Image 1 (spheres, one colour):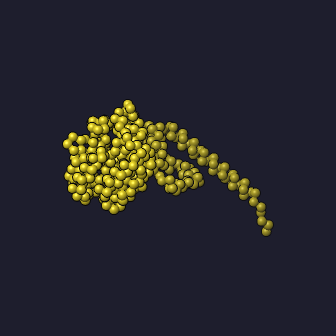
Image 2 (cartoon, rainbow, N blue to C red):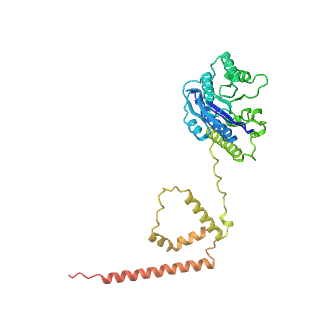
Image 3 (tube, helix red, strand yellow):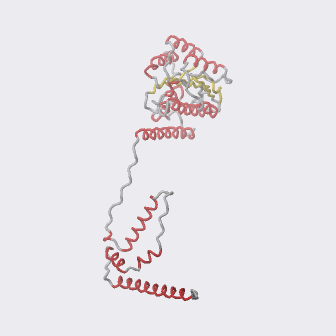
Amino acid sequence: AVVSTQSTGVLESTVICVDNSEFMRNGDFVPTRLLAQQDAVNMLCTSKTRANPENTVALLTLGSLKVLSTLTTEVGKVMSCLHSIEPEGEVNFLTGIKVAQLALKHRQSKNHKTRIVLFVGSPVEAEEKDLVRLAKKLKKEKVNVDIVNFGQAEDNTEKLTNFVNTLNGKEGTGSHIVTVSVGPNLSDALMKSAILSGDDMGGSGGAGGFDFIDPNQDPELALALRVSLEEQRQRQEEENKVEAGGDAPAAPAPEHVDLSQLSEEEQIALAMQMSLAVEEELPKDAPAPAQEDPDVMADVMADPEFLQQVLTDLPGVDPSSEAVRSVMGSINKGNKNKKEKDGDEEGESAAKKPRKDN
C-alpha cells in the first residue's frame, strides 16, 4: 500500500502493504486484527494525502499479493478496496516488498520520494539474511520503509527491528518500526508513533500524537483524526460492556406515601399520577380493560350502605359531617326520582300493549 507526504510539504508516494493472512481473524485486537488494521490504514491514508494534495497512495495485500489500487490521490478509491479485503493464505513478506518496490518504480511523478508502509500481524518466516539483503537494496534505491508490527510481536520484533536498522544505517532516520502489544488501540498507537511524527516528517511525536499536524493550517484533518480516535474508543468501550454482560440497574421503587397526611386535592393528583404510570407500563398490544356495565355501577351507587362503608374507609373523611350527609341525601333523592321515573315508563309501556281477545 501507498502513503504520501508529510506536513513539511515534501512530495511522497507510498505503497501500503496490508496483512490479510488467516492470522488476521484473531480477536486479540478489537474487534479483529483485520478490522483494527482497516481503521489504522484509513487514518494513515487520510493524514498522508491531506498533508499534500499531490501525494499518492497505493494498496497491496501481503497474503494474496494483489495490487488492489495503484498509486492515486483519491483516498476513497483506496478505502473502497481496503474494505473488500478478506483473510486468505499466509503472509509473503519479501515478495510483497518487491512488488511494492516495483509499483513505486512506475510512479508518474519521479520527483516524489518513495515509501513503503507494512502492516504485519502474522509470523514472518523469511530468513534474517534475506531480510538484510533486501534492506540494503532498498537503501540503495532510497526507498524508506515503515513497519507496524502487531499481533505476533514476540515472533517478529527482532527480525523486523534489524531490517529497519539496516535500512537506516548509522545515521539514517527515514524508516521506522512501531511494535503494538495486545490491548492498546492500534490506530491510537500508530498516531503516537514515529511513523506519523518522525523527525523526517517534521513532527515531534509529542503528547496526544497530534504534534505532526498544525490545527491552524489543517483544522479539518485535526478534527477528523480526533473524531476517528474517539469513535474507536467508544466502540471498544461498548464491546467491553457487552462482553462483561452487566445488566442495567433497576429503577428505584417509589417510596411509600401516607395518604392520611395528604389533602383531598393531593390524593386526587397522586391517583392520577399512578394511573398514568400504569398506562405507560402496559405493553402496546395488551388488551383494553373491560368496560364497566353502567347498570351495575348504577346499582352500586344506589346502595347507601355501600357508599357509607366507602366513605368510612377513606382517610381524612368524616361520614357524619354536614357536607357528606348533604351529598348522600342528594344521591338518595336522585335514586328515588330515577326509580319513580322508571316505574312510570314501565306502566306506560304495559298500557300500550294490545289485549288478546278471548
